[in-house]
Amino acid sequence: MARSTYLGVYHNEFFERFQNINFRRYDNGFGFHSEHFKRVTVDAGYSKGGRINYDVPSQIKAFLGAGDEWQATLTLRPISRLKLDEIYYLTRLYTASARPEAVFINHLARSRATYQFTRELSLRLILDYNGVLQNPTLINIPRQKHITGDVLLTYLLHPGTAFYIGYTDRLENLALFPGQVNRIAFPFTTTALQFFTKISYQLRF
Image 1 (cartoon, rainbow, N blue to C red):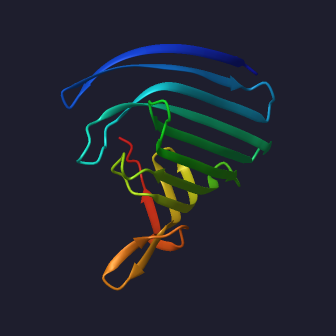
Image 2 (cartoon, helix red, strand yellow):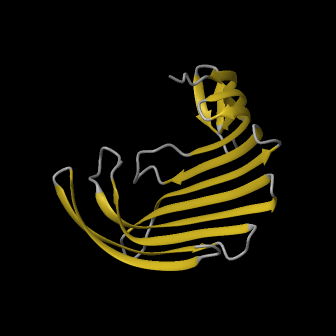
């Protein structure tokens, strides 16, 4: 309903078999949503429980760890033509021991702005960040940081018939050296650059 607000909590129990190993795990969490203010929408959630490390190095077996996830989305509409979204996800996995060790930590963040010039013409800007910090002795994924910028201009005559102009630039924490590629601290190197136009037309019969 209009201007609704709700809070939900949950508990789940799971049984899973992976690589001939039986895992029993649980998950506790909550979700929150509010549209109480006309120009602001808030979504948030948190879950915590047992998590399986599926992607282990060859010398160890898959194991059950302790993990949690945060999710938050803030949507602002300062004026009727402008919509701003701030989105953040945090995922963490630790060993389930008396002295937990971090297996990996993953940060995902997105800033998105959409401006509607007219009913047909709109501009969308997106900036993404993806950062993974890992323990190479416990999980078989690379330590990586990505920043991606995306611009899209859309002229939508009606659903199915539209003209698009877009640009995408992706930066990664890579450095090129003679005969090798190394990971560095910050995402400075462009690994994907694209400029495109697209026309779609819906045939009506």
